[in-house]
Image (tube, rainbow, N blue to C red; front, side):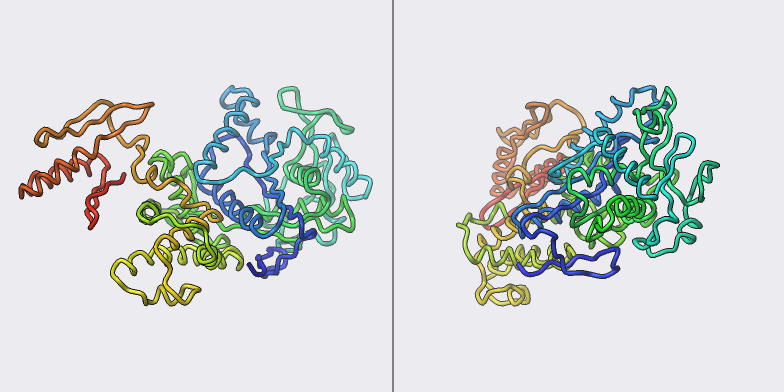
Length: 500
C-alpha cells in the first residue's frame, strides 16, 4: 500500500500521515458517557475509527487504539437522582449495553479502554502542573484553566476566544477571573461522587478527564486524536490547552480527525421531534441489521453529514444479502497474488482520507464479476476497471471481497448463517404452522430460543407441484414461505432459499 493521507482538522487540509514512531502508531478517540443507551450518532465515530484502526494495523507493525469510558459526569449524577438507581449500577449496565451494541455493528474493542474514575490521580497531577505553570488557579473549591494564559486558544476550532465565548454556553460564576475560563476541578457535596484533592473533596471537569487518560496510556504526545465534529469546541479545544500547557514543547496530538453529524430523515436527532433512535432500535429489526447499519454508515465519507433513513437501512441490508449470496455460491480458492492484488485495489481508496464509498463501489465491481462471467462475457466496463489484464475467476473475486471486507468490517459472517439462520423477532408468535402439500409438511419448531423451519420439504413440495403444472399450489407455497420471511430463488442449479 502507498502513503496514507488524512484530513487534519487543525490544519484544515489533508496531510500525509507520518507517525511519530513508524513501529508504533498511537490513537485516542473520545468514548461514551455511560448513562443511557448509545444512539445512532454515538455509533458513527465508533465505526469510523474502527475502520481506521483496522487500516493502520494493516500498514504498521503495532497500533495502540485507546477509547475511554466517561463514568463520572453530571449527566450520570442527574440520571441517578431521577431514577433512584445507584451510580455504579447505571454505569455498569450502560457500559455493558454499549459493548454489546458496538459488537453487534461489527466494531472491534479498542486496545485500551480506560475509565475516568480509574484516573483521578492523573487528573489531579495534571491540574497541579497547570497551576505550577501559571495556567490554572484555585477559587472557592474550584480549579479553573485561565484561557487568557494560552495565546493559541481557539486555534483548533479556528476562532478567537471572543468568538468562542459568544457562541458557547458558559457559566459566568463569581469565582472565575474571565467568563471563558473552564473548570478543571469542582467541589462535591455529600450526595455527589467526590475524591479527596489538594482543593478539597470534589470531582473532575469533563475536559481534564481525556487529557489525563491519553497522557497515561499514550504519553505526552501521540499521533491521532479523533471524535465527532461536535467535540471540536469546547471539548477538544480545551484538551489541547490543558495538555500543551501541562507539557510545554509537546504538540499533544499530531493529527485531529472528526466525523460529521448523523441526521435522521434530514433532521438533527431530537426526542422532541420523535426521531431519536438508538442502536438497539436498529437491532430490534434483527441481528443482520447491525451489519446493515454499519454498511449504511460506510456509504458516506466520514467527514460528511450522513442522513439515516429506514429505506437506506433496508437497501443496505439488501446489498449485504446479495454479497453473501455471491460468497455462498462462489467456489473456494487458495490465497494467491490475484486475490491479494484485487483486495489491495478494493482497499486503495481508504488511503485517501478513508474514502469508504469508493472502496464499497470497488467491492460491488468484484461482486459483479460473477454476473459478467455467468453470461459468458470477459470484457465489460467492470472488467476494464480491475487491476489485472485477465478476468478473475469467480472464486478469486469472492476471496478478494472477503479479504477487503476484513478492513471494512463487512462480509465476515458465514454466508450460510447469514442467508438461513433465524432472526430474533422474526416470528410474531411462538408455536407451529403447517403448509400441507401432498405428504410434505413445513414445520416451525423452537430450538434454543429461536425458531427453525423445515424449508427443504416445502421446496420439494413446490417442485412437485410445478412438475404437475399445479401453478396455484406452487405459488401458494412460495407466498406462504415469503410471509414467514423465507425467500426462494430459482436458478439453473435448482431452488435455494434465504431469510428475508
